[in-house]
Length: 121
Picture 1 (cartoon, helix red, strand yellow):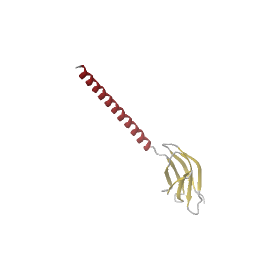
Picture 2: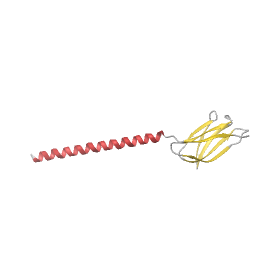
Picture 3: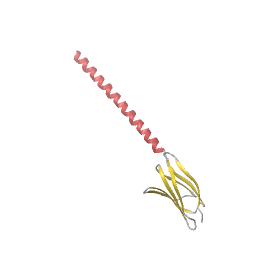
Picture 4: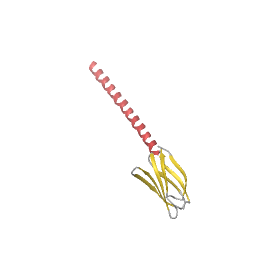
């Protein structure tokens, strides 16, 4: 009789351990998923306005050997970029001159607005 009670107690203890372990695992997976989803929602980048609006044909964001490019629409641009320091080049249409902006810092979850970029002839 004692043996049967010990086995029953051992099985109950094992079942409780498995249930607790399962709940902890589910909680950890849930927390990691929520944190990952939150990070994925955060967008970092560089934005700005170009005048005259039709004077630029391309905007480049360069970090080391990586480059991102975008055709501005209506004189505005927003390039999604990872955190870091960038050079921004506005490739102008003739007769306008190209513009180079240096040390543009992008931080996690924020868009760095470089403001208005006036292209000159």
